Image (cartoon, rainbow, N blue to C red; front, side):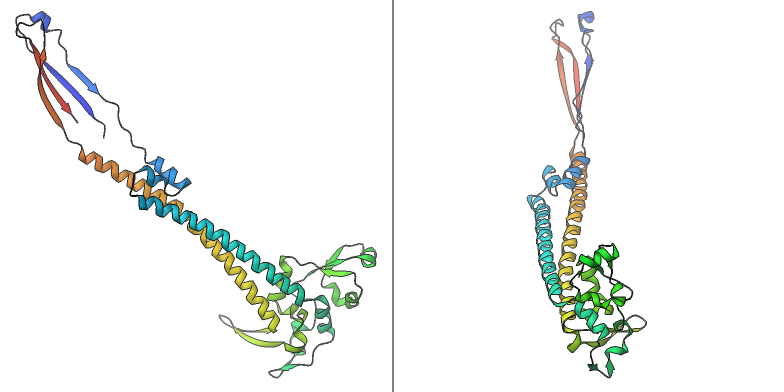
Length: 295
């Protein structure tokens, strides 16, 4: 709280009243000490712990917020690196074990394997290449010249399965490709073990049961993608912790700053002092009485 010094002079009229009247009352006010709680707030929002340092809070508060900040950043970097490494691994696995040739061959020359009294031909998703999703096929050489296109939908292979032997087509291995081959039964025939090791399982949904067609390689691939996605989720959690750390540090800095201001205000006391004023022109030397209030 601001301090004010008020000095009241009570003039004592003596032998020389005219000279004594030169004595005057004096009011002195010091510079107000203004508290700005927004300053530690902004400091902590920029760098957690900075507002606590500004408030002169216990050092463990500054260290704690700063430690969470550094830890969150390092965790985010590490989780992203791990996710990228696992992504490269599952993509390499897919490129090696899934092919257009296997997909088309298993469509037009289905395996005779029976699993739990059901054959390949019992599943409509395996009996055609056209379905709910598609892949992008790149055309080169004479096929590109013939159709005047550099790319077509994988649906075209239903009509032109002979393209797989031309050496002039390839599949675009983009994000949709890596998602489709692991998620949809339509593409299960592309796995290299589909002909010999395919099987089906029932998947319980909220209000129904779904049949999912798998192969050991497809399951392996799905697990690899899951691990990579888990690392990405952990990186997102790290970012969330990072943001909350900024906000919590800012709020704590403001609350502490305001509490300190209230405590300081309560600690202020009113001090008084009475003294005599000297007047050389007064025979008694007394020019008045000074009453000082300090608050």
